[in-house]
Image 1 (cartoon, helix red, strand yellow):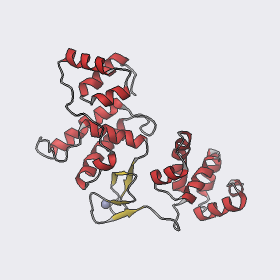
Image 2 (tube, helix red, strand yellow; image 1 turned 135 degrees about the horizontal axis):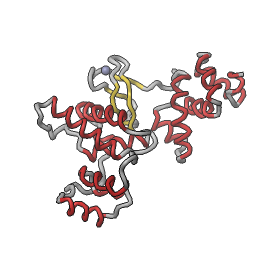
Image 3 (cartoon, rainbow, N blue to C red; image 1 turned 60 degrees about the horizontal axis):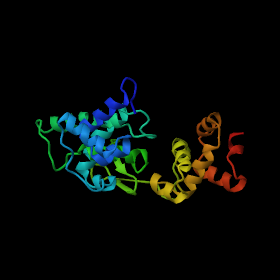
Length: 253
Ligand SMILES: [Zn+2]
């Protein structure tokens, strides 16, 4: 959370004013429902009419149009948010959503297209699921556009050059070691949260042997990790080293 010159009270007011659903406000602040209603009353605001469970990011990101809308939001959010991979930056969600709304409107002569508009609650869900690694940024192999995708999808259609699919490498053609090195810090974080191997593989879209290598990479010092990546050793060599020696130490010696 951005807390530099804002106290909790003004942050809470800002969050209530933004129009975020009560269920989100309750989960993100120390406010009770009653307090939220009181602040709304005091500010002359009406609460969101939406109730029930929040939508899943998988559902939100099920069409090409919505992937594009969510990408506009996420590009702004990832620029503004502090440590978006570790925490939901609620104030950054609000700022990024305002920026997104401006982009959305400017493409439509100032109007909002309700059919594809990513409302604030949905934008917040995307930010939450990015932190939970259920949503990630993917790069199109063909046009190199970065776009938001739900991690449960194993195949992705690039929203710009539709028809061309970006596939996660399957077993047999492992990801390069440099890519696994980048993933390794997320892997160790997820392990600390208690994710099991199966969950991790499906969340990160990697195979079990790639996960084993990513885990082994977390045991190396930053200097050893850099040296190993710089040596351009292959992931297959790392898998073999782990099978034979149980560690990657000898590869960096
Ligand atoms: Zn593309």
